[in-house]
Image (cartoon, rainbow, N blue to C red):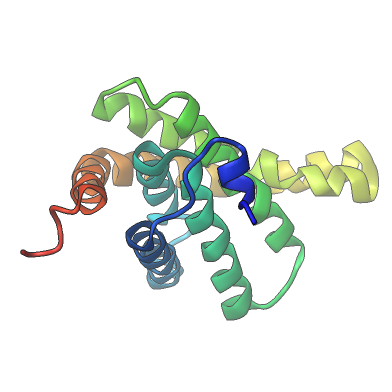
Length: 178
């Protein structure tokens, strides 16, 4: 039986990709947990951008594995629904913009994502309680979104290029030590 990826003309995940993307999901979760004491400063946005730049649509495997690990760590809540689409939006943006190069550009993309995080997470509140509830949720978190934007910008500026370089080496098979 053909997999949905094969039917769509895409190659299924190789064992190397499965292992790398699984390890990347674990790295995202570990980085998020390690930096949890800092308000909305996390490496996850940068890691998702790096993964999407190198692995394209296959990066969604790592994104959803990360969300599943987070749900196991913190329990289920509305935030899990948010994570399921918010991180995919970031991966999709990186995939669509992947031909654009430059540290500053990607730092801005990551920063803009951090700034828009609260607005994106407010979407379910629109369906639960209408415009007033969604807007009040978003406005209440703007200070955190500003910190998220600054943190994302700094993390991406410092770490995105080296992370992409390592991922490309792993993808090509040059990172296995032989």
